[in-house]
Amino acid sequence: MASELLSAIEVRNAKPGDKPRKLRDGKGLNLLLHPNGSKYFQHRYTLHGKEKTLQLGVYPTMGLADARAAAKAACQLVADGIDPVQNKRIQNAKKATSATNTFRCVAEQWLNIKQRTLAPSTHRKIEETFSVNVYARFGNLSIKDVSALVVRWNADPHCQQ
Image (cartoon, rainbow, N blue to C red; front, side, top):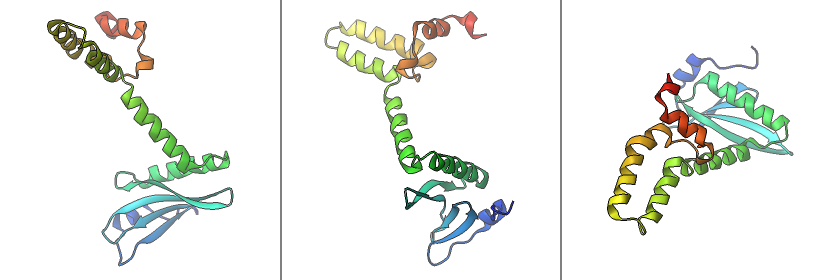
């Protein structure tokens, strides 16, 4: 395809220079080469008359095919009038929020609060029960996804076959 100027071999073999430089792949996708040898995929786009750059990922963690797919998704966001940089920030904030709203996190907060009113032996038993039987089954689920059905399904060994 004419718009895809780079090959995976060219990306892998690209050598750094004295200054940062860009290798263009087309449709706004660039590979930024730093003098220290690091390689970053970027997508340049224009939204509302302003040119912006979206950081897609680091090579080799992100390959050329993945960078092209991410750039294509960013192009679609721009076409829909959505700023990909702002969208990425919002998605990262949602991930961070959901990481603190897992069943385990909420249960541990609850146990800390209940520690003041429970007998030490009762608190320890609840804590051990959660650690052994509950956290492994659905401790990493978002608290909003934990329902009676999820708890029952996870508790019944016949449902998991």
